Amino acid sequence: MFGKQSIKNYHAIFIDDVYTRGHSPLEYINVFTQTAYFNPIKDLTDYSENLSDKYSDNLEDKMALSKAYPINLAQTSQLPYKNNFTIFSFNKIEQIMLLISGIFIIFGCFYVLFSKKFREEKLFKIILFVSLFSLILISFLPFLSTSYNYQRLYQQALIPLAICSILGFSVITKKINLNIIFITFALFLMIYLLLFIRVEYEFIGGNNIQLRFENVGKDYDLNYVTFNEISSANWLFTHKYQKIPIVLDVFAKFKIYQASEFILDTSIKSDVLPISIEKKDYVYASRSNILQGITFKYYGSGLLIYNFPIKFLNDNKNKIYNNVNSAIFK
Image (tube, rainbow, N blue to C red; front, top):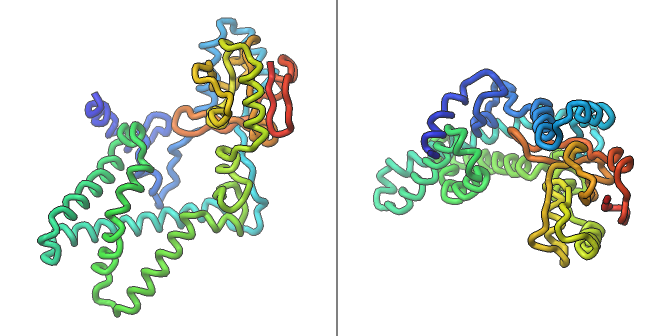
């Protein structure tokens, strides 16, 4: 079934329709065209409509909720932009660096596999072949890349392939002075690593900032857990009725897992929209929900970030717990 679905979806890489084509990692390193592999507007509309069909059979109720409490795409927190550079241009640079490093790896792998110098290194050759073949396979099969953790495989494969990047660079530049090769490759690695850790956004602003640098940005809003959030979760599990569901987004769910009072068989609904929040439900709001006014949902071709329905909750629920960074509605 897995192989059949992968083969069936292979042709979808080359389809022009952004709503039906497959999503391969090849699209992420397309440095020549701007490929719209993620359409959050359509995904958010589809998500809302699917929930409406699931939770309500009354068309008038659906329309009234949509009109009174509209949902819109939102942004995570960000540093103010400090100059005229755009995130788009740095994305292009990152893609070009990734493409170049991939070329180095491929040349290095072929050098190891077919060079006489590595004739006796059979185990090393097998490891390189499996790593390279896995990367190539997952890059060309959309179904495989979405069904397996591509980022994890990429990081695992880079461990044995790292030496091939150096070998590939030396093969390509073998007629150049040795000192120039070392200096050039060292500069390449420095730029590559700086881009990889997103340090440039510290100087240009934006929200694509690593949590290790700032308490701001997408990583911070998604993953950072405060003491107040854990305290509110502990209060909730101590006072809620056992069988009543908790409505929260997917990243808030990861946060309440850290509560000492967490109950394993808790019923959780990760659809945070007015149409899906029922009268009996508890609603757990995290720091990002309250302070940033945003909520998260994996749907369609990526992560949706949209407005948290605070107005709906204030109009239709009671706030039974609040500690500034988190709140609970019933």
